[in-house]
View 1 (tube, one colour):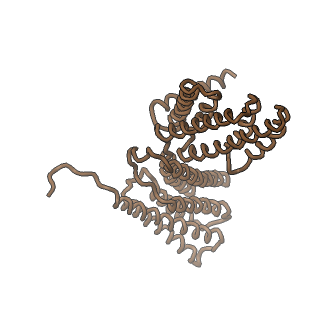
View 2: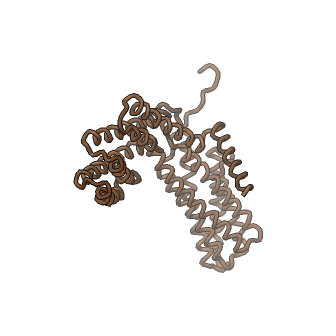
View 3: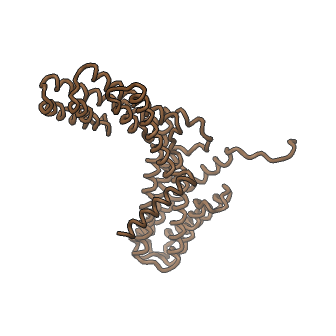
Length: 377
């Protein structure tokens, strides 16, 4: 018990330190939390202190939950919440006026509002339909003036929550995309080099399964990248503040994701074929290791990085593949389905590596070059 509490306290202190020292998810969470609290305080100041509204609680309550992860989601949630609050309030008021009894009115209104709240178009905001009905019936205020006040206070809170999220450090989710775009080449290169080192030595089924598990995790990173890209695209919608931020490099198109989806799948297919191979000609492991190591050099971020260096690494991988193909066609060696599968899988991998190398070279040529000191000729 004490160990768990110590570990939790250490983790909290580490998160606080990261929040203060560097941008990241911890700082984002802190900023959004403070914005939500500030929106609620502002809504209470307007509705409760200045306006002295009869149901002032609804304004800060609404504002608090509308500081969402993106400006677009705040707008969408505000619309959804206002619609369900209006529906829940009117249904409760109608049930109260019809029955003149709180218990009977709840028996009528709550089933309808809960069903309404489960309508998929309302998303997570559907919960506020029965909540609004409970507010009306618990306070027993069914008059038109009271209903109007509830709706105005809800609208005020929604407007404050949306405006605070849009105008005060509006969230832009681009860091996750950049992180995953940098992680994919690094992890793929590390796995390819690990496979190359392992093939040259003695390896068994357990070791190959470990490589396969790492390849599966790479495909999971591609799925995370797609999700992060959707969040990034959404965070720019209706966001008035993103143009005021420091400009960053234009991210690759969605075709970049598709290319890496294929690369990770080719790596996984190669490992699967290697695992199923009962026997291979003696020269094949060395050729395959050379191919994998050169392929890792194409993707490695710690390589020299110039387009020419990547192109040379790709040429070396292609040369190793030609020698592998020659073994397949050589009648002196026994042809096996595994050898044919390895030849096909690695050819597909090299085709996509050629696409990555070409794209990298084009981006390097189109990137603006820094100015050098000295007089212009």
